[in-house]
Length: 162
Image (cartoon, rainbow, N blue to C red; front, top):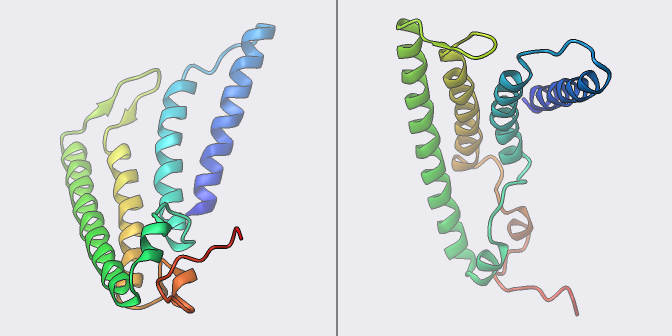
């Protein structure tokens, strides 16, 4: 997934670079640069998100977590897993329904290049589905989102700057 995200970002980089250079020296332009750039950013975001969850590189407020007692942060951790799992399951289902309805209606996103309308929803569906899997892993005990607290989590704020 992370490699697909990197490939999408690299493709956008090359498209924009070519577009700028082509405008400067009078080469023919790729008309679909903007459309591919927009879909590439969507692909990048949704393919990188599951990796960020697995690598524990997502944003959370460590200060608040460290001020909690070990029992409270474990309870908070489970609550967060359940909420995130539920939201990802909902978004996966919703995106799948939108993709299906768009496919059945044969919708097309008309731009400089015609892109089937279901593609954008399918990308969302995949990204949320893989995030769902990662949160289920955490929910059922495979790892923790707070590794720095799991090894000795006394719940107190460490003053590393002193």
